[in-house]
Amino acid sequence: MSRRCSNIYGFWDRLEEAMAEKKMSKLKLARLIGYDRRTVYRRETTPSALAIAKICVHLNISADWLLGLTTQKKPLNKSMEG
Image (spheres, rainbow, N blue to C red):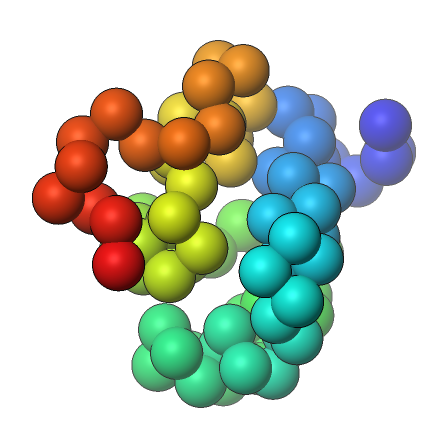
């Protein structure tokens, strides 16, 4: 696990894993969620709750999984799929 403070639960590693599975670049994800690409590139801070929600919708992943709180990768709420 990375030594970065914001990566305590593996947030950035999980985000990169989900992006790789979708073959999505950081620049494309940043554009999809309406953020500057630095928001997705910068690992020393954690994106806002709104950014995390948008990331989860676009990558079809669970926010709890992204935050390292569960091993359930897919969202349980089918309405989040998109």
